[in-house]
Image (cartoon, rainbow, N blue to C red):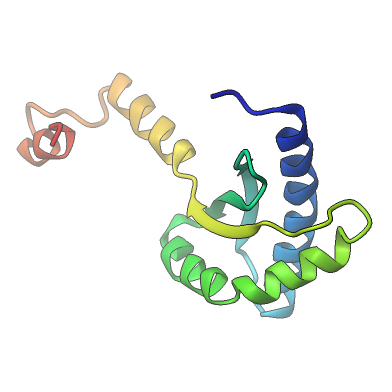
Length: 131
C-alpha cells in the first residue's frame, strides 16, 4: 500500500530531526570518524510506528552502534518529541534498522566488474544461493 501524504510528511519531519539528534549524540559520545545518516523513515498508516533506516560508515561499527541506538531509543524518542511538539500530537514508536543498500550496490558493482569470481571462489556460490 502506498504511503499517504501525511505519512510522508511525518516521515520527512522525523528524518530531519533524527539526523540532528543522532549526529549530536555521536559528537558528544566521542565517536570521531563515524558517520550516521538517516536514509529513510517509514511511518505506519496509524502513525504509531516509525521504521528508521540508518546508514553507518564505517560499516564494521554498524552492529555495535545499532545496539547502542536501540538501547537509547526512549531518550531519542523524548528528544524528538521535544523538537516536534508543535508539529506532532503523538510521537510514534521508533524502530531502528541498518540500511545496507549501499553495501548491496557495491557488491553488485564488484560482481559486474568481475572482482568477485564465483567460479574461482566457491564460497561465493554459497552466499548467493536463495534459502
